[in-house]
Image (cartoon, rainbow, N blue to C red; front, side):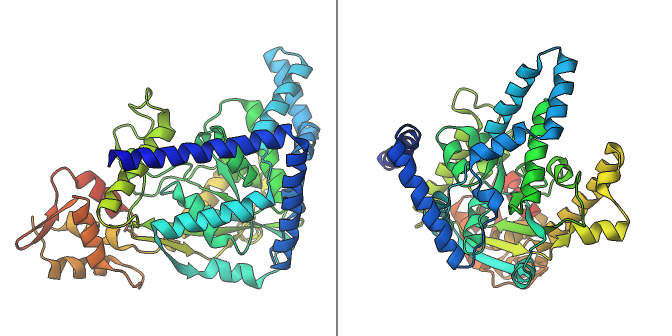
Length: 453
């Protein structure tokens, strides 16, 4: 087993090395850079013939977008204020604006996205999970409308880092997505790959006012440019399986200058649920993924270690498959219609009043997301076990009880879910039925919490 794990790590190191070598060659060798650009241009033409129209903003060169940011009147004014308040020169403040712009702005490459990223996302998704799509109301509305005067923003609950991969796989034949990626995506060469896929880097909880203004203007330009974005209102992964209170930072950036007469913003709720979350051990350790791992590679190493542990455990059970990953798309929420129904003009509100209105919208979006989450068998079985008043629950009572919790009809394999929990040693099978294994209450509760409507 140690040899098998070492072999996988070796292959991963080789892939990272080869990708890093391609990146270096692309930066240093003009012929390689020209070749990659030519391939990207051909892919844009190809996906256009398949009906995937990429907005001009997404195809604009990174250097041009950075130039737009550094010459934006609002950012010039913000830099002046920043320089005055911090007693520094305007040149120094503008240097910071440019540095932040280079950090945030991605360098989308159509070849990398459609010919490398999407096939890889599809392979990972199908190799790990039986991907099941529940409600498709949001997709039906998108397919029926031309969306000529609207930007689409997918708002999604956050259960796993696989969320990114799963949604990219499902939307690969419709559009190219841009994510707001956190610190984990800033590690070289992973950051360059993710940037090439169109994701933009976001510092979580930055206290730098100038950085926030640069990020805000980029998000606003992206919305105005028709970029299809994805963000997680919760702002991070759920560590107990329950939905988190929404954060309003990115949502406020989108709405601060929102003009319904110019364009609309369609928020498409996406709900995701899993039979087996790859990072569950990392999320549930005391203090979360950041705690107790300072000397072993930090948060990224903690999540990777949990993933590897679960994959090896699944393999010992006979397969790398982790059960079902269920995704549902709810009815879109139009910012234009929402603002009209409440008589709100976001761009005319003072900051405090605007934030309060954005919070109301954020809570509405979280409710629509939660309503879109499809049921999954393992969370329902875990809930039945956790809530059972008896110590042991026979199978002929356990499965009907789990089925009764499902608010939406779905072809779920409860027997397979029970076998998975037993294989993971989270449930003990004994004469007379099943009971939670000693010490497994926390992780069973994590899954049970994702079964509530």
